[in-house]
Image (tube, rainbow, N blue to C red; front, side, top):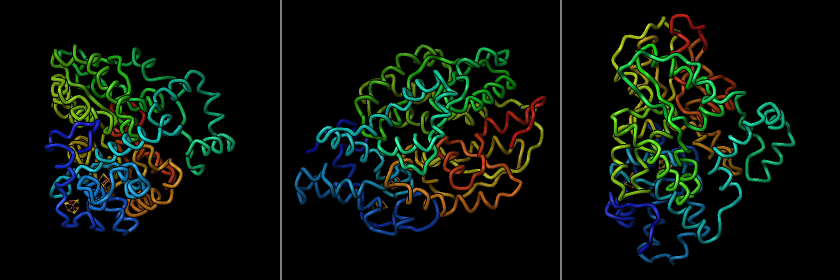
Length: 420
Ligand code: SF4
Ligand code: SF4
């Protein structure tokens, strides 16, 4: 048996989790939903959910030697899995290949070492925190061709624009923002992208919560661990999960909901911490307290002073679609605008997947399948996408600025200038 670092006990262990695949091949569908983005663009059996489960089954059953778990063939089969979690929901047997890929990356890294790119990507919060100490200088350098070439040496595709940082972090802006009178309270999970790249998102969310009468806390947190899990850095992700539990439990124990702006971050806490810390009783309490920003605002059930806005074209984040659905986002945006949801599948960026050398073409094909044409045809409509990497992909593929729902709705609050 394979000694896994992630816990698969909810599925009866790793072997059982793999054996869930019954081979029916629904993961070979070419349109509709999200599973499986890689097959939808390559139409190659190797890039199906089933092929990945089959490869693992062969190692577990001994048809392939144990070293194949971390070998070249496994790497090839897993390579284009974007970790979208769609199979967890759309596959009739709920085969969770995203978690299996994390485990394979962990086993491979332990065996052969983790690359510089993997370590840098896993610790992206640290890199952006450092860059934000001198934002103007960093942004100038990041815009240079030389910087892209240098990033290329570290495994980043040079056709991608490098991430920029905001002039001022969200936590610096936060004390100046309005607060509701209470007594309702919410705690905002200050994700990496909100803190260092787009604090306007958090600012919009706080203004909306204030308009709904809520007091917003901004507890100290560390990275949720999602970038680490995507790179197989399971031990590091576990360390962060434990730290976040230590930091957040005092608020959670008081019944304060934990609100996330970036779907993949807050849903990592809801969906993945149990695989990292299966015996920690706090994990379930934290999971129960997590809310997407849209879920939390709807739950408050207050009228918001919103003007009518331009119609919206909405692209949902894969993890949101797999674990929650786009319903809450549609309902919240629907208070101010007509909303059309694109059946876009995965945008193709999938965290840092689309940045990696060797993934650029597949990543752009995934975007080009449905999302990019829909955005190009959006006309006057405002393009909204809750996911940071989705918004970056939309910019790279169509040069259209996409907004987080909090940014768009906050711009429709009385007294605010409309954006979009
Ligand atoms: S992964 Fe799911 S959908 Fe694909 S063949 Fe296996 S059981 Fe069927
Ligand atoms: S996580 Fe997404 S990309 Fe990976 S196998 Fe499942 S559906 Fe396919």
